[in-house]
Length: 291
Ligand SMILES: [Zn+2]
Image 1 (cartoon, helix red, strand yellow):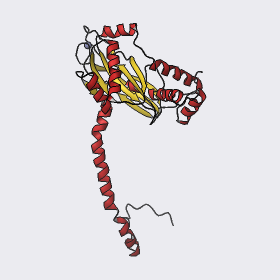
Image 2 (cartoon, rainbow, N blue to C red):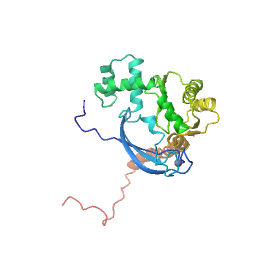
Image 3 (tube, rainbow, N blue to C red):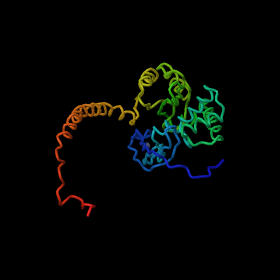
Image 4 (cartoon, helix red, strand yellow):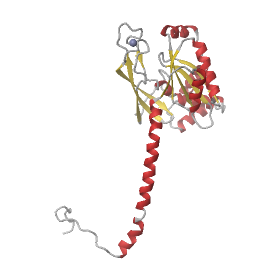
């Protein structure tokens, strides 16, 4: 059923830029040419995505004027979807792991603040089934062969602690999902097997790998694709880099509070001594309300 009232405004905004700056076709620099905006419903609320799109302007290049979208976009939401991958992973986990019915899943999503109707839950379940059944058919394989290389991105979505993790492997050049699996464990050898499956199915050279740098993913890439450059997502990279500064700042705050605790001992002594409060200067004092 069509939405009958305006959608609420997104509470957060995220700006995503492509990590890659050089054209995969000719190696020349790709400038940011325009911006796409989309609003996505996630388990953390509505998010407004501002996506900076790069494009190669070299006329002789095979990728002339073909958009290169931020690699991080596919980790949040699939193309042309309104609900985030985390919502889809939760719907799949509730249906197939906890055997919940559609009305129950609908109620649980509403309790978690996801504005969704029951019919959409059925659609999300269908999309989840399609996602985990993704196979690389012949037309898609031909399209990958035509672009001569793939840049793989791997992300794991775990809606809640204890749930299975939905692992999604995408190609950043075409934006296609190449493989999606729900796994309870995520050891390096499990992930290396998934990467190996994608590499053998595509049969196209892997030019690069993008991930959030999780330890098991690093080991899996080292195992399955030892010679492929591995780029860490800038968001996660900067967050990790800022962690020592945040810890040092928290320590400084704790030390400062220790010093200030001494004021509590001085305050009663000040009251007992009835030391007059300092008076304001007549020029700056507000006019007295009493006559
Ligand atoms: Zn180019």
